[in-house]
Image (cartoon, rainbow, N blue to C red; front, side):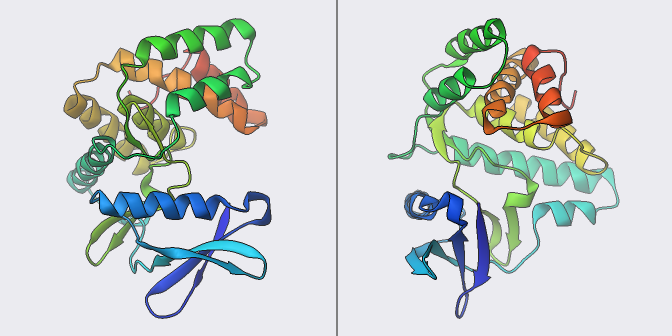
Length: 246
């Protein structure tokens, strides 16, 4: 959706690709609110236009992604420690309430309606979404995975807030599991197993509820237009024929 370039001393500019023109304005607004709420983000320094492309100017975070750090780990204790810290960071985000975000449940409902799933499955998932929705409306990053966490000098920083919405924490966790569920290999697989296990314990959420959220979010993800083996995998998740990281 964007390209990132160095932009002066200690800054970068994240320029929208032409087909996504304007999303940087939304992300800038989200980042201003998120920083004000005390969340660990790269601060926005406003929106600019360069070569007819809109972009957001951000603090430059010097450090590897969590995914890169994870791949450098040799032992299980280190992987588990990173998973626990990752879970706590997502909990911090989900426990924050922030005005001005789109409603995630409404988005998921709309996406299910154009997911391409059999009408009976889409209807079942819409009903399941209504049952799962407790009315909780915390911040959901909805693209929270190890490549979107940077390990900077001041600590862990969460990037790429374009998909941010307000909704139930269980949906955000389900999306995280789905985003790394298709082709995870060690140590990512063990990391995500630990994330699921620790997150359910910390949230007091049952495995069945987590699996139900995975079905809904996987079904909604089909609206993004995937094809081939990945789309078939999402369909199997949506039907409840697969479980993630158990």
